[in-house]
Length: 199
Image (cartoon, rainbow, N blue to C red; front, side, top):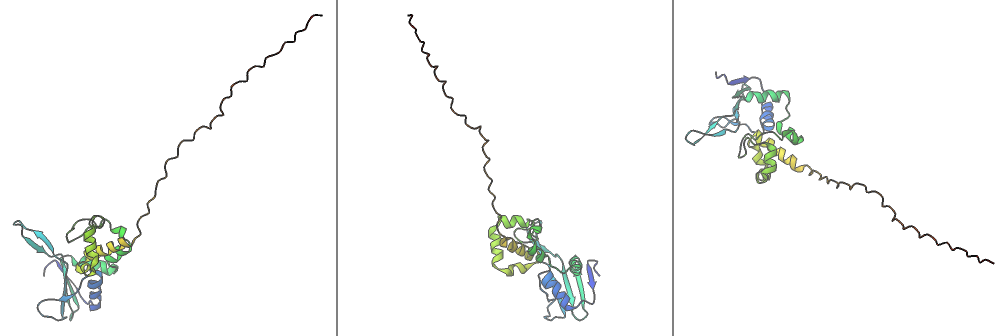
């Protein structure tokens, strides 16, 4: 068996539904050509890459297969890491971004037009893309990363704008109190000399 395939047994269907539908924001679909619930699968969105001849090819980012009869869950290409996190804490990543968007400012988009750009950059600089995403919630169900970014943007928009604090102008230095105008000295009074006549 492939070393990248890990099997977990005795897993109830309701737990798998919670893991895929809520935690990964995806959906289980019948595997193969037969449309039944005996074998179900979920695939992460595939990455589109450029080849040497400028042609696009796809690489798998992980998937799981669930066998309803035997209750066996098979993980491919690193998907088991998400299962381990889910078992430790079933709170989905998109829920955490909804509650505390600032903590996800430096998170990077994993797919789409703005792949490998930080959440805070796309939200603040790419208003048209954000508006397009929020117009239709179904667009957020494409992948866990897109759902997380969707909830991040919605939480950011619901926050009140930061208050603008105006700086008070610097106060002018205190000036010395105005001195009273100098008064000119009074002219000396003329003394009248008494002239006595000799008798």
